[in-house]
Image (cartoon, rainbow, N blue to C red):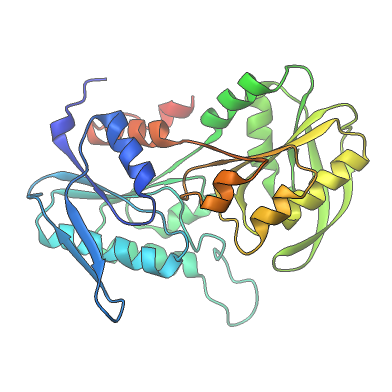
Length: 317
């Protein structure tokens, strides 16, 4: 692909500096000098320290913990770039927070994913680039072009390198994730099973039964987000109880809140593989059965294709 590194600017917030630097390394583009700091009362201040007038700018910022702080950083960076006369501003959001609030779940509750989409749009973003949205319809919440990338190619490569062919079986941890699991199963030519569970309350789940034959198989649980880890741990126990040989989990976004890391470390999961869409904590880095794979090359290639007006969807053909 013909790509001139001088044709774009990369701006990074504080949410995931290592990922931004890895993307910059892949594109051979230095990160634009930018100061994102806080006043004494924690008010956020942004200063773009290079000329961006007329430039194609990509702002790299996940809205991960602390979600509100990182969201405000993103909005203020976009506003600063717009007022600095950037030609086009693309919000690159590897992990889109608030995505689980994509519908009214009860009376008098918000659709916060739509609110966040409005905030990003009105701040001045011209387009959005994100990875594995919790719900695909969130793309429609934006009134600007939105590309939802998939981490599946990175995961497929890792699975093929590490797990023997013929023994692999992909498992959806719930009925709602069947489409995602089926897509991975098709790519690695593996059968599919489903965990049927009942969720009693937010953050807790009870596994009921397994739909499909998992006996003697290396099971691969697939999902977009791991938060408390309860679903994965319960699913692993149920799969092993039904004769599975071993259980792996491939999850795009490692939110891993509260005691999730210790819960997974002491679980029967052989390994949890997450991407670096969210910057891993020290606890994640030292956990015995958690491994992080990078999506920097995937995001870098999508940024390059966006800059050159090339097809992004062909990345997943």
